Image (tube, helix red, strand yellow):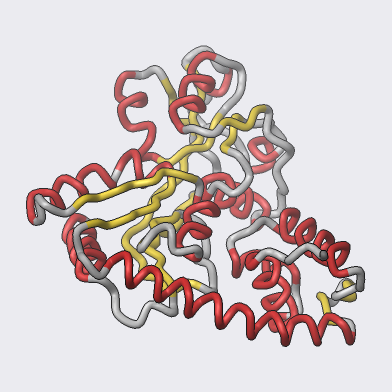
Length: 300
């Protein structure tokens, strides 16, 4: 019996065929290009046929790839209808709300929102899952969360979305780091050439940083360390030899206490959007989701 391809792999193939680009398809489904290429290669191995022809001009489907993409589109439509129905069933009682949020948002913004929600609807049971932006988007696609909050430079094309604010990324170091004594800060080139303490692949913070310095003509070197929590990155930067790039929201207390020092980066300011996402197939947002969006809007 053959292996059944995952919904995410099929969605990635359909996006690659429609957009003619693996990198654009990766952005559409919330994956890195490396992860997307690995998934497509695995899909070709599973099916036993080549699906895409890649070139410097992008990607085009093989004859088999075009057929598989057409069949996959039908499967995805059915899966979206199923997930939307299940999500509506879960939300029909209006006694619970499942939320997924990126680490920065979950740790620094969501507590105020949830406090306000509880004050307005004390009987509403709220479940908040904190993860990186890629995982949040996947949770929303799969119906595990009714709404998600992410911090990637561009929202996934297959999800409905609304901007809820913006955020700035800053470079921070411990007090003993040589950069802490540089009044003029560092250049983009020096920053990009220095290994930083970073979140894992799939993090909105990491993606926003890497895109910003790459757009300035200086692709960053590999991180010195990859850590899965903001608190671990803060502590490592404060105690170690490596800088970190984090949301200003996540380091305000440490900057005030002077356990971390903000390092200016000449001719670079990284501003990224904060975005709410939900399934496009959701016919009508549940009352609890609409209420949460109103609370978020009032707090912005």
